[in-house]
Image (cartoon, rainbow, N blue to C red; front, side):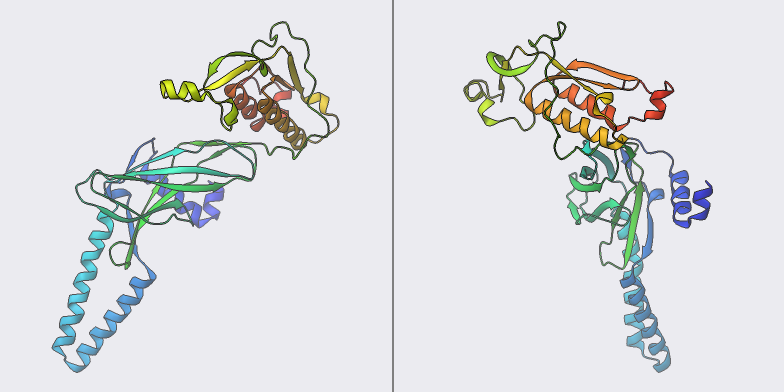
Length: 330
């Protein structure tokens, strides 16, 4: 709270959030959440109206009065239409898949128009940025794509989403704040390449190679992994069943351990970067691997779930917490 008191913008955001309360997965923009102010164009237009009114008063020009009052009435009515363009919309933040530090997280802001009238020129984005305007037909919806920057590994809160519109004349801007209760996962940046090859397979009676993808024997069909080679696709099965599957081959190799202590005298982030690269290469090669960190051990396994589990562990790893027993298996 001390930081917020020293930062006026943070204090205003804190007041908005307290006034609106917590946001769930679906947010409805009722009128109490919508704020409206004149734009620069609106302020300039108001100055022109005031000048016209002064001229009409000075010269007692009835036509000048009529034009000034007509334009003023149109301006007042546009306030209602600008606010109404946002009122009643439902907003959901979706997607936001995990990425590596330095990459952009792509999130989707789904806006649903439940009314019988169309909504025009709706923008969305974090504070200080916005997407291209989108039009929503009556009873329709649209998904606005946001690209959020990342700078460090770990979890980070989804930024505040600002929805706005300047419809119909651009004289006023109505906006609403949405505070998504969603955490974004950022994996460590992988090392460019390994100084040496991956650790050799070790004999493992529990993980004996029957679970390892390879090229020795055909074991059946499975759901394809992201980025899988077209040569692995079972195209004949696709023609028969309409479902895209991949050919599964197994080899007889054992498992590998990616060990924190085996990396030598490296700083924390460098070790995490090297371990991330090992996991990427091992997953691409279809190898069974386990992960050992101080206080944490993930048994050898393979597959996309194990892949993301290991990367999540590296992303949130804090050596101090692990040394005191504060970190454990995710």
